[in-house]
Amino acid sequence: MVEAEKFVARQFLPDRQLVTNYRKIDCKKTSCADLLAELSSLPMLGERQVFGVTSFQSYSPTETERILRLLIPAQVDRVVIFSSPSSRTPKKSSSFFTAVAKIAEPVEFRRLSQREVESRIRANLQKDGIQVEPQAVTLLAELVAGNRGALEAETGKLVNYKQTGETVSVEDVRQIAAGYEVFNIFQVADVIVAGNTRKVLQMIESLLAAGNSAATVISLMLQHFISLYLVKNHKKPLGRRGFLIGKFTEQAVKYDNNRLERIIIDIADTEAQLRRGGLKPAMALQILALTLTGETGGAK
Image 1: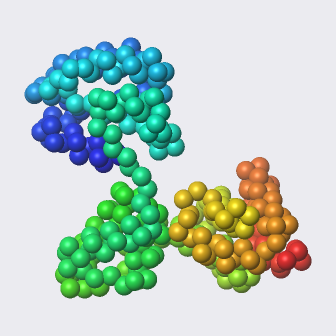
Image 2 (image 1 turned 90 degrees about the vertical axis):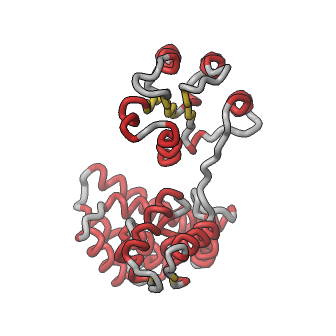
Image 3 (image 1 turned 90 degrees about the horizontal axis):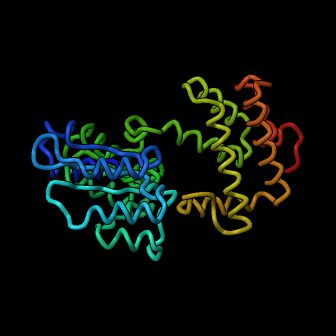
């Protein structure tokens, strides 16, 4: 959304005017009266003023109506981009969306599916004559996690890294793509499910040495096991992890509900201990790993 706003602004403003004639306004921090005053102002320089108005749904229906009424009829010297965060995406049947759509062009920035991401990765690389291994596509798609901006950024890095006619490998993705350490954190939970205590302890040591926080490792671990519980009981994982449902389903079979509930409680307890400063991060993670893999005699 941010990149799209910048793109629109550049279509109407020369580069030198972006600083003076492109205004970003956060509705959560700006009163309706102040926004109306801003939108009524004339361009300081040049022909147009572009406004990026974020969190537009923060206003009441009456305030929204006042703002939209100000924009009719449209003026050639004023371009307004309203945006609303994804967590509060309005229903298309809502009165808010209907009112805005009457005078504005609605554009939805939804998260891409796993299949869409993989297709775009191949297309972006093939434009520059670069091939990609199937496993590398899968790995990069999981790292991108449906984020359009991340998709463009990461494939752009690979285009700069490889030459025309070359092939992107899994190792290339590991070396170049941002967030590969986070992907390694995701793998910690997989190894716990596999019951490989020694490998889990090695991974934890490596992740902490690389600068990852224990809180991040524990948080992602917790999300993983909550997803297992949800898939086992409701056929749906936590958040936007639908593309991993096959793996979650296979892993969830290894546990009954009592064990999954115990694991979730154990992880949450460790997270709480870290916040209180009761244990050193490395020790807290090591004890948790031993507990979850059954090395401390916990129920299977």
